[in-house]
Length: 387
Ligand code: SF4
Image (cartoon, rainbow, N blue to C red):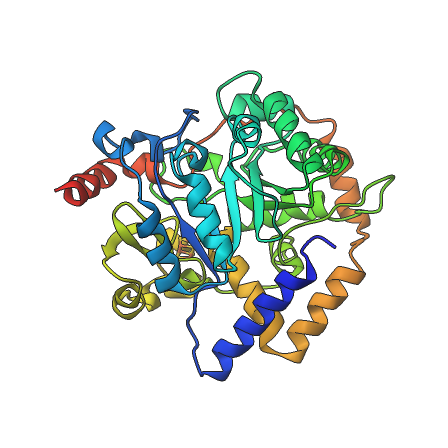
């Protein structure tokens, strides 16, 4: 079982509770960014391009706890920056676990072994290390611009798994990804013993200088159909730590509209409008974020060009989860997707075989999340926040 029953139950009762209260907009996962600094400098990552005085800052334990309580979401994802660089990360996690929040600590794992040896964390069903992995060794080390990173992460993952921690991986795919190599990477992660994997396409940002690097909707569907179909070839028994309906959405089997309020972001500047990807202002409180954001201006149906090709996990996974618990049809579709998860598809099989004859190298285009292209606006925002 990729997600423990207790976690599924918590999410199910939370969603049903919100619906019974008549709420149509409610958060599912808080994206809590306690700092922006990182021990890697991946090409195209906008977070580490903030000015030095912003990179030195971090949210206090109290600020993190207050944001979590204000938001009320049952799950908290802690990305960054690299959260293991936060001096109080152990205490932040302990406080959230005490409040029975399911915490996904997103890390590049470079410091994971050290923190485990120091005894900073205790295994709990509420704590999962979500290790960022961009593929097998060659692709991963190229993507994060440092050799040896893959091996270091794998060593730390093994230690965490053997110590009884929940461990998942999260992977972002860009145009040019080799679908056969991604399937081999999934096999490798299963062999290491991770609980499940998460996968998402990169964000297609309309202002990016090189649009070729992004996965547009049709290309996204084709890539994911090749990767995720025919799962019973040989030894493949993949477990995903995400909604099976979201995976079907990536494969082009169903349509969803974005749910930007499903995964709200809180960081050094406040509550980010409207989503994890776009920075269009900040609210001081979660209530203000929900009340004052022009939600109708976002999502594909809005016609906003920034949203036209977006299919990312932080916008659409909440839509899939809501579908599961919103109707009997959604629940039935989810159970069906969990039981009949082979997705035999001869056409996708043929395309996958054809891909073997094409040249694939490490991913050539690495602009992530759009921030890098919007750095002037980000810097202006940072200056305002620091003032
Ligand atoms: S479609 Fe993407 S960019 Fe637009 S609001 Fe949703 S998550 Fe953000």
